[in-house]
Length: 143
Image (tube, rainbow, N blue to C red; front, side, top):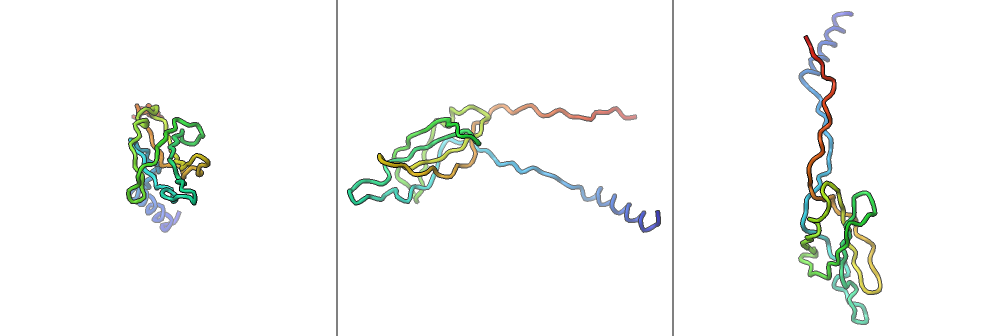
């Protein structure tokens, strides 16, 4: 090995020692929640030609994340939006099983039809005890 190769090898080792590579995992935060907020339907205040409200109410569907399993459904009525946002306390969120991730959708409806569901909410759930960590490995006694 010539001097130049030896210097390159030493320089590489110095870089590894002085500039360690840090790897981090991205985790989507899951929030513990007690309320829901959504944008009112564009038809929230619309009246049809026969004097009927296009939106008579909203329904919240809460489901286990990644499935179509409904945890619960709640009729929300037709709350008054503030700046086009509807915010409601949902006590049922506190009764969800711990450590299960959920999402929610909202549907606007009238007696004759319903809207498609909204896009799913951010993930949320009720925190419970954490799982045990994975064991350490590769333990060796050294001289």
